[in-house]
Image (cartoon, rainbow, N blue to C red):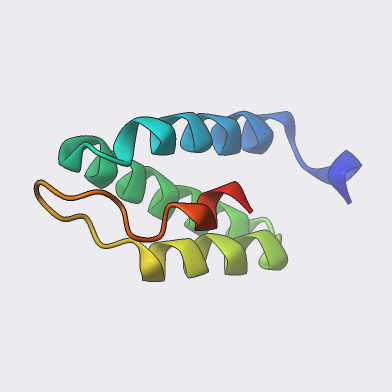
Amino acid sequence: MADSIPEEIIKDLQSACQLYQQAVCNHDKCREFSEGLSGLLVRLEDMKFYRMADRAMSILLNCKPKEASQCEKANLIGE
């Protein structure tokens, strides 16, 4: 399946992971991550990459940006 994933999607996923590392303790970066992953989710669904889209949805459902607190679900993105 990895061979069929467009390079653009792979780069966007890598960017999301890097942004997430910055977002763990930064509310603004956390919101940016959430918004970016939401857009990526739509694209994954449009391209029929449902398994990855489900994973992105799971991350988004557990992503709740909070001011002045560390991410409670930090381990999700690493999986």
